[in-house]
Length: 490
RNA sequence: CGGGGUGUAGCGCAGUCCGGUUAGCGUAUCUGCUUUGGGAGCAGAGGGUCGCAGGUUCGAAUCCUGCCACCCCGACCA
Image (cartoon, rainbow, N blue to C red; front, top):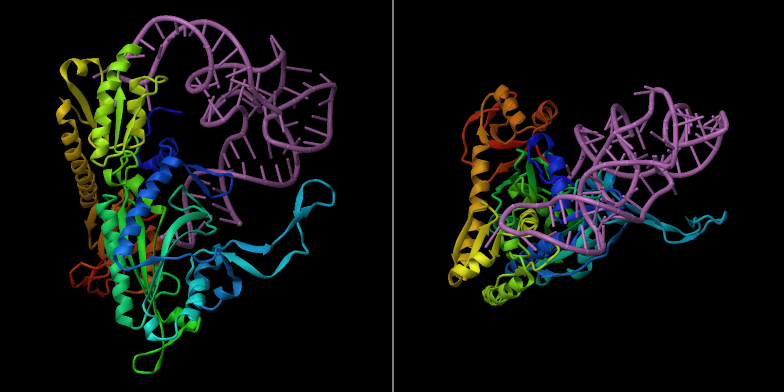
């Protein structure tokens, strides 16, 4: 295990993987493309989960749970949906094993073949809409605003810890509405919730927009998304909210009696974020010393490290440290007192930095004499000595400062790496360095496809808040009304 | 699924071309002493079906055949 980790762009993926593993977040599992989320990583996910859940409830949603297995036939109901997901599904064909006839191990019992294969959900639209059909008869049954916390499986060709694993954890909201406007409003509301969460809690700035037809979710009429820029200059889709129109209602025959007494199909939305957000968090803030966690999502806010030579000294330090710890905890901070006597302070410093703990307090004999403690912040690595009675206030201020600072830093990075160009030549040059590019596009699938083939860049989104501006498509020179966001992406 | 690469101690690797002592190094682990304000030092100890299965040979980590797994780059994707 080497001591340093480098975030140089050319070995960014190794850096990322190494960081995830060393910072004790996750491991590769024995199952291809899956990961083991370790307790520390899971604690971060739980923090994210808790906050998102709060935000969903505040916007009127409730949680429910639907089956892991989906009958194959459900999938073929919505044509574009099956096209989008069929290639990457895990399929259950049998329900029993038996001892092999040669006595060596266990084989699948070929007599136990399922009449209809079951798909391990890659997303739950189909099984949920099949259920909603029974739940919805009248406008009085609407809206249905349900969220599910679940795992899904997508048999991806290539995987990377947190960013794209075969199995991943996520939440998926599935709502049903009586009219188009309400469903559209819900779609927008949820992308706003996501953007809020990612910016205010994860401290990662995002760009809100809609996907082009080519990048749209399979079966959606419109896909809203938030896009973030990682430190290697690649874009990461951090969350999506889909306006599904009446497509799934038609496919699953979900009609309702309207106020006016007519029969109409239900309007749908779905929206989700996943453990991929962990990937975004890691890549957006980390440095060569390891993870940098925003205080609002850090499982441990403060670590207290004692510095001492003899056991008696430690006993004296404890008398100072325990009341301090208690006082910090009363303020609502999660505090770890690292009293291990098996490793030296320097080792502990490095380890807690690797794990991204926002604030470290060191207390040693020198402090005992002066009535001080040393406070170090993870984001800037600055250290300061302060009187012990001021420590609690100091730390409390520091937490807000750190939260703001890492957001500002990420914002500045994005600003410095967002470009605007009207020349295809320059467009290609910028892509080599990485970053977001705002450029004109003629609005056709063909142009988008050709740009992707020639440059590996995709249209991340058509940003919501970009002003209209007449221009010419960067590739074809045809007229364009608005710049769109291009980037290479994960 | 296409291209490239790698499987040797918990982790990271050397040895393989050119077969030949008891398979080695770093790190981690354990014990002891000294250390402790930025990843400690010394001494000692434990830990291996050399990815799997065949074959060639007096002798295989090394050569041959087949298989498997993983990683990277592409295509695909949250």
